[in-house]
Length: 138
Figure 1 (cartoon, one colour):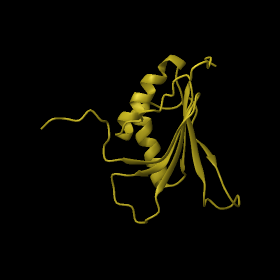
Figure 2 (cartoon, helix red, strand yellow; figure 1 turned 60 degrees about the vertical axis):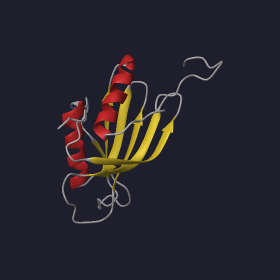
Figure 3 (cartoon, one colour; figure 1 turned 120 degrees about the horizontal axis):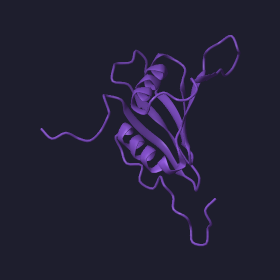
């Protein structure tokens, strides 16, 4: 049986929005874990890839933390631990997010983009916008 060059171990990613801008790529979507979830709401993620960083926001709950564990295995640990952002009242965790950022050298962006494609199991074609005619590199 031929093997497919992917690192997915059951996590599935469904991209709802892909916005390629000159200096960043924005991805919004849902991630489905490799186990049955006891509830039906989707695990939402928001990712931004800049010239030298990848940032991710995900729900601060069991599934969100498992997704971060998976990404830490795939991308390595970030320089700083995830930060928590609590929405609504401070004594409630409803709507809380985990924010994490991976840094990489600017010339490592194409490799990080390929790695992200492997992790998500899909092409992010068009995710690296080219310069428009007459546009100078910023």
